Image (cartoon, rainbow, N blue to C red; front, side, top):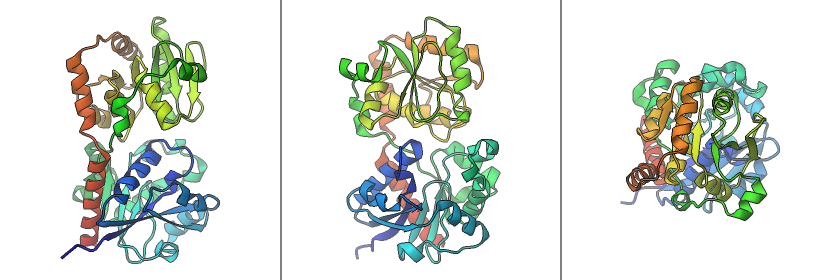
Length: 362
């Protein structure tokens, strides 16, 4: 007998606006779920003004649900009680998936919550005013969820320990690398001119923020005048200065080109939950330098240069080695093969397994 399609309701709010890590995760996951015949996927947006736009950014086959309610009001209500349940405005569902740290309240549905990292606990003072209640919301959601998903085993272990939940209810659902990264080509002269790219550059790709370690990156880069220009690609306020260049938020295609043309990619974060740019750079056969923290050690698989956070001289030396790394077919093949082992299909399959387990446990 054919198995009835599992009704899944995703928090699609991260799909609105410029997509960085969580937005790209939600988009790729929803695309894979939409292609699965045994999953009936819908998405809801929690926003006062932008909820109607959700239907324009969802993959074919995923239906949009929404309600003009400010997310901050919903969060305050969910801190005090289980009202309003998400089914009230999104309809019945088997599973509700909080894709972005917050688990929506549900009347009957099983709950799955994705916790991407623990930065909200490590540095609560860096949260914007709108997210001041996030630590308590995540704690409540993790306790209430039937299954918690994390992108790495490192985050899974930390979530279990620091949020006081059973490690057995945490599932690791690693992120994936889009196929287009493996055919990425350096930017053409026209693209270089449009973006103001120098001939050689070291690249940071991602949103600016206190935990991204940009201060010590700039110090390390400044120690060696022979290093290529440092280019920042992403939204936010980046450092300014000599041999520093910010090219802003890029389309997916432009980002692939810019990464593929880099002499090296650097991710100097104080902490990360996954570090998708590491794998995307490996898919483009670009050397990677990143911080020696648990998630990046796990994801890089021994194929990146790891530097202790805050070691300015160590980072400068690693960058110098990376940009001068000789091209070797064996190293290229190893990097690409490692990146290819991370697929969005695998992420979706692991997530659906988490959904079914949540329904059984609920």
